[in-house]
Length: 500
Figure 1 (cartoon, rainbow, N blue to C red):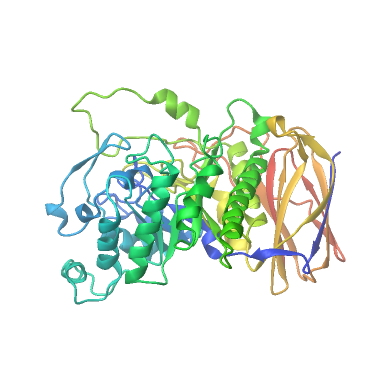
Figure 2 (figure 1 turned 45 degrees about the horizontal axis):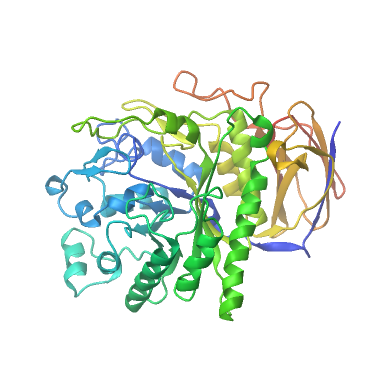
């Protein structure tokens, strides 16, 4: 039986766990907005047309900042289309996802939804087909109290107080050839710096995110970050990172996906710190990992087709992955990687929230339910508070496929006010792994509880036919004797241990 020993010590920390680490992402894509969060005819719909059953699940998920309205969608979006009387808003072609955007939901409506789910708005501006002027106009509309043309226009549209948006994304995936307005790093870096400077002339204390690489496999990865930050370092606060993982028939490598995320984060921070040293700056650029998830991207690429000229559907079913137990275990592992880098990852957004590769699914006129990936996110976002610890681990390894030998157990831990949480993934596909945890260095008292995700069928799912096939399970093997916890982790499992 594989074994792992973990030592926790409050003297060895990573950094504070910032709440934005548990953010989400809502894009006008497929059935995410329409028939997902917004369905006025649904029996649970509130006065703004938003499904209350979905609101309840998002609140249970405990997401913090939510990035909006994209994503690829934002690179062709005119924010003005989404304000003013709904019946007068134009229908537009969305080139990003070959759909028709009705603009029934825009900034005002989305803020109503954010208020209902108790989350913060993280707003993206279009630097694809638009630029600096449109960005500062949106900022004036959203954040200036009164007395200007655009702030008064907002007030006439029914919102007297400003939206007070603090965090802004300067475009989306501008390194990607698929992106409307795709630019090279030099051109984007100059545009990002110019836009950031202009926005700060209106509101100096904004938190601004420059576009990093849209994936570690991009040929410009690393060099893109360095070049963009050479231009924009003094003007932005964060550089973004995007990463998606899929099984592709190789469960061994898939279960070790966190190794790739660790490398991604380390590479981006190294590039940022190189620019810091070159500029002799006292400022540090951190990461906004504002797109991450498990996604069957290869299946999506196979499914894309050539559309007829008049074929622009409203809210088509796109990217509706049905997640397995193995997917949930990997999501739990990616959250472990984010916690392990809490000192440099200031914000992270699971992409996305509802229907579109989301932990929540809905059926029009029907139910909403939790996918398997819902559980590791909701539990981690609830339990991971205070300070992330450097976990000192020793023990057996396992084959990590294309990532080589990796620890059989991946782990992260947090501590706050005498309470602690330990997050564990057993990567072994056939063997239970025994884990011992030394708590002497953190002084955590109280009861111990363990719950997680595992199943004899690692490909089990929750779907419309069986919405509760997979759920949280209590691990009854957890024991505490003095300052030592012992627990048996089932094969291919994610587990959260709470102390106190």
